[in-house]
Image: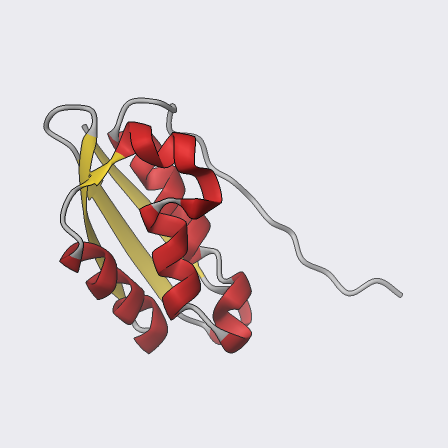
Length: 111
């Protein structure tokens, strides 16, 4: 199964396209394209690790390959970047453990 997640980074203005592909509904490969240098570095680091076992990722949660790699690469102001969550969601869809459904965040300053 194949999945595409497009993340609009918000105030930074960067868009990231996350492609997750799995031929066996378990092992997932990624292609991540972004105008953001940190998101690109995250994508390159994730791709370098080879296919990610989607079932193992679900069990590992925040200690899995995707989110650990995100923590190592998306630091500073990018620590809360939605690219990491988008990548995890793409993995879930590609591995067939979740159906595709948009996630929305509305961020406003309260008065």
